[in-house]
Length: 580
Image (cartoon, rainbow, N blue to C red; front, side, top):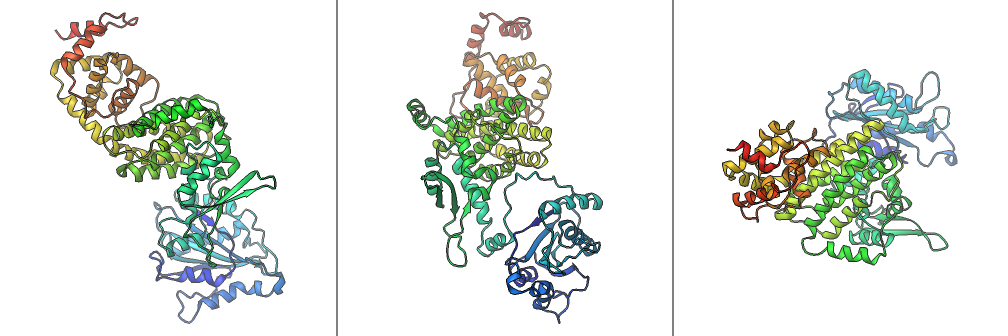
């Protein structure tokens, strides 16, 4: 159950019109009162002889009783209380009790003989109610509604337990500000899927991804079409910024600007600048290396480097100091934003959803120490600089590789938040991981399908050899992997790695020992990408000639002349002794 306390308003009648109007809003059906301050307030939804003006006059009466100069400019308090989609439909009587508890907990109408404000609770949909109150008590004073949002949340947690509803994770004050009801209504009127605040937040996040300086950040905002206002000190030093959508106007026809800090706590200019720490802004060697990275094949190369950076970051999140782990988790959000921005159409929606969900997981009260997260931030930069990727060939296959590695990084972040007791962040990271899982399935199907067919065409002696290598390298996982559909794709990868001169048993052992596999849907799929990344094999095998038995046998003969590891027979001896 989520109570959402909105900013105070100035027109009671305007809010009542919205709550009772049914023509414009699909979810506004049968609007009616379920409770009020005295239990006897007139209901314009059920009584044809009562108007909205009648209800407004009663609610505003304590305000109007004050001298005009003493009336608060914004006297309308408004909160919505929404049930979780999985909860049962509550009765009017239950919503009435919820409303009374919320206004008591927030200080709007504390009860127990204390003077309260006038309020009414309107239900116009199955899953939520709206409470409107006027912020003058019956004795003419301001109510004690300090931190009413936090107090409403605390009461909601108690209500959930008592009514057997889904228990929502409590917040910690690091979440981005929710859109106000006025912003949501405006977005609905304009036909927008999201509010201006939400669109700006996503655009600013993407502009930050991998950026190295104020200049680059503001250039990206301008390129995205945002209006920008900068705030400078008398000395000329830049202190902050505001952004607006060109077509989001107020009633005077002027753009509505939002400061970065009002979009999200970590999007203020000082917090953004912390990310520049350690960035090689004017290093000629770094610029030369970047020019190489943005040459031909840049999208695929950027995705490979992203996979490698994510691979290393998992260890940091799992075993590093909290402040360093927090920096890597925040940088992982930049990588997701950059990947979503540059992804192909068939993965873009899920990657965008993953980035949006993970935004909540990227912040906590553990203050990140920047600088240690350079590899991930550089990966985000490479993705942006490399440009959009195609959904096929090496671009598509390396996208699957990157998503696979990022899935494990985001899962590690979720587990880290669980250990720290960050309930909302852990839940957000888990949602992001599910979106990544869906995006991976879309990206991985074509390249894994090619590898599967190559594995199916391996001749019997060669396939037997790959089976022996698997059982030798991973005795505890071999039977599970051999039973998976992805085994043939892994067998083809083992054959390619061996033909390229690698020790496939060592590659397999390294891939398993360095990362957990419990969260993988298919262990064989994970090992395919880890081996191909480590051995620097093409992610997309469709353009390669068929792996020949002769080529692998030649590689096998070469490996039999090398010293074997202690306690392990040479792979050639293994083959000759078991395949005769």
